[in-house]
Image (cartoon, rainbow, N blue to C red; front, side):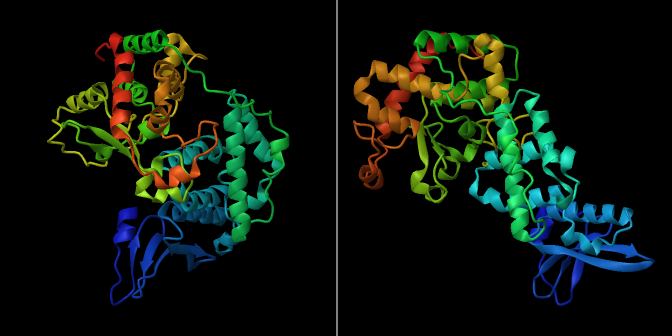
Amino acid sequence: MLTTSAVKAARPKSRPYKIVDERGLHLAVAPTGTKSFRLRFRWQGQEQLLTIGQWPEITLDAARARAEAAREQLGRGVDPRRIRAAVTFEVAARDWHTRRQIDWTPVHAGDVLDSLVADVFPAIGRDELAAIDSPAVLRVIRAIERRGAIATAHRVRQRISDVFAHAISEGWCAVDPAAVVGRAITRAPAARHHPALTTAAEVRELLCAVDQLRAVEATKLASRFLALTAVRLAAVRGARWCEIEDLNGDAPLWRVPAARVKLRADKKLDAGNDHLVPLSPAAVAVLRSILDQEAKGAENLDFPPDRLIFTGRESNKPIGERAIGDLYDRAGFSGRHVPHGWRASFSTILNEEQPHARGAIDRALGHVLKHEDGTVAKVEAAYNRTHQLAARRALLDRWSEILEPIHVAV
């Protein structure tokens, strides 16, 4: 079978050749270097050839989905060479996702696709775009609402609508049946602050309660690392070993790439916008604990340096989006604290203790620089390239001291 790596590695030869996938699908490589996915099939007793699309415009997954759609058409007695006029929702969605994910972090891209695979594809994935109406979309959204996931329902409806907008632009369909569904679904809850603990005693109590839980060690360690660094949850879920600098030195640092920081798309391309997080001794201890679990030394890793630090059931996927929040709920803090709440805890407790350090606290959180009156300091943000790492390190070391009195080995 074909793999994405094999498709990328295929080089032109003096004569056309093909690399077989399965059930008639193959990659045709022309002497010019053009790579096309094609499907061999029989129609009315004659062998036929359907060109699905060129790589990389069409990914291997999208080609397989389109090939499957063609086989379904054959089963209904329809000539699959009408495939462009009968694209299924899953084919369109995967094509949309492939084109959009370059603007997203890998973690967000994974979450978007996972939501479609879990909630949408089983219901309407195999349906032709033109056959999907607003009631069909509403049934998908209602099923999510019944779980009580109102915010998720709104996000999924928007993603379905975006897929149809993409399909309309490609000429695969003419209307967006998800557009009007937004008026029929349950109103999204009003925006509110994330629940967060705001005293030193409370955050210590939470960490102690989590330490006592019987849970996956990687998730507990990720929770502690999140607390100690006060970054966004997505940063921890996507953290990789290659982002850690000077782990065994005097100034250990976590360099979160700008591509994974909450920034405008254009700013994500500039490495100067990387978010630098000085690592306290306690944060370093978390990382070393993970290395110890791997039975490896920090200087002798035998896994790829771009490997994820905090992984879920599969070593190539991050811990689940809900994993840490579920820990806090189990620890008895449901409605009182969520993973994102560590940023509010960090800011509230340290600003109260060190009101003169507001600027350094904001920098440690990766916030936009502001004047005393709260307006954005655009000029300073543009020209002040200092990172104030010493001040940040002092703050994060102090934050570690606030959290650590209750430290219990995981």
